[in-house]
Length: 119
Length: 107
Image (cartoon, rainbow over the protein chains, first blue to last red):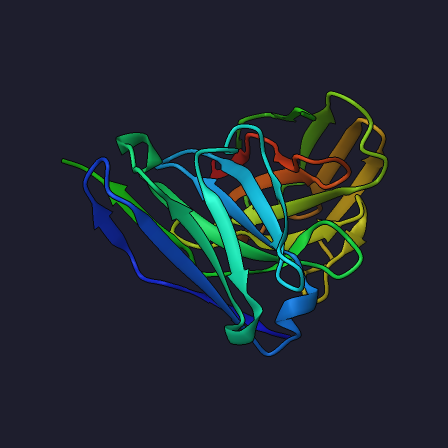
C-alpha cells in the first residue's frame, strides 16, 4: 500500500531558504512519480511539479517554474521541495503525492507540511 | 494550461439528498479526470479516477461520469461523513491542474 511521511511544520522569515521532505515507504519509491501540491490558507489545490525518483526527470507548472526546485534521493526514498528565498506569499500547506504507476492521478498523499513565512 | 471550472462553488444539502457536482475543462482531457474529497486539515482523498472508476474502499454512493470536457461527480444519498470539499483533477496534460473546489455544507 505505502506511506508518505512529510517533514514537520516550518516558520521562516522572508528571504530565508527552506527544504522540506517527503519520505516514502512500503512501495517501490524509485519507480513512482512524486508530485507536490500547494494549498494556500482557505484556498484550493494547486499542482506545482513532479519528479521521477528513478532518474530525477522533472516537470514543473509554469506558475512555479523558477520559484521552487524539486529533487529526490532514491537511496533514502525521499523527495524534496526547496526554496532559495521565501516570500510571505509562500505561506501554505504543501502536500506530496504518489502518482499511480502508468497513470497520472495520485492515490497516496503525505500528511502535508505547513510553511509559514512571516517577518 | 487546462482550466477546470467546478460548479457550484458551494452547495447546501440535507442528509439523504442526491448531490451532483460539475467540472468543465477548457479543452478535452479525454477520460483522464479524477475526483478528490478533502476535509479540513486533512490531505485530499481519492474517490474516482479515469472519470468513472471508483477507487477501492470508496462507498458506492459516489459515482463519476463524463468525458472530453464535461464531467460530473454524484453522491446518491448524502451522508454526514460526506460534508467536505470536492476537487476535480485532470491528468491528461502537463501542467496537471485542479478545479477550484466545491464545498458541500449541511443544510
